[in-house]
Image 1 (cartoon, one colour):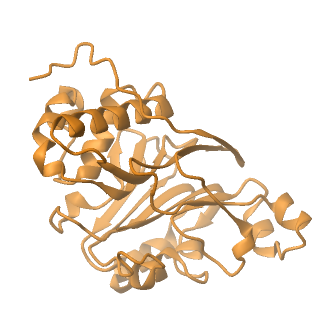
Image 2 (image 1 turned 45 degrees about the vertical axis):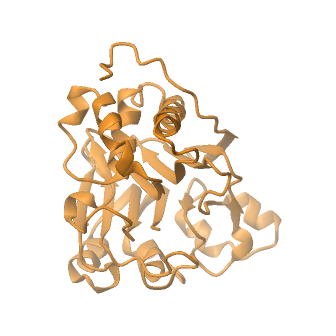
Length: 284
């Protein structure tokens, strides 16, 4: 499928993590460890937070490893929090508006996975998206549908609760159309202060997801923490697959789990889809 990365910590040049470490996200766009899609060449995207509330966004359909604009931007931009994504498409076409991250005001969203057989019930899901968010949809991916459903179900007030309601909604609608196991996903989400992440699949076999250990943990384990110390004590990452040279520096996220990363601290909890109350949402 796809690969994505989130970073939160002191401001750093984006190239230091996107290009200058072993098995970086850009390397993964050419040779990821995914058996399904070892090459992610259907575009990339980068969303970063700077001096303004609304994050910057750069997306392209070029392969990430062969885009000199990306290299130049990553060398010049410093950010304290960013999300990056390399894409391997399933059904949706290769176009810039289908590249992640997706943005709503100060929110960024990335997705790895798919909604199985969504072509059978996509129209029903679209009808559930609130009008104010529907106007923000520019592409044709299942990922963008997930994001705007979550916004409809209260993402801006209760991020993880909204994602659980989104997942419950998709599974319920899919089941009504004969698809028993519809969701297969990892999600990354940020408002510019926190990062939330989810690993979940209807069949219990979601794509991989990892988060980095703290500098204190690396030191306690006797591992080389020089690079982590250079980033600062609050620097943490969430990734589809580990980057760098130290495998023990990463913790695998269990199936059906959610993370909340803020100020260097990671909290985990069980992720449980919940069928939402549709309330004022008009259902055809």
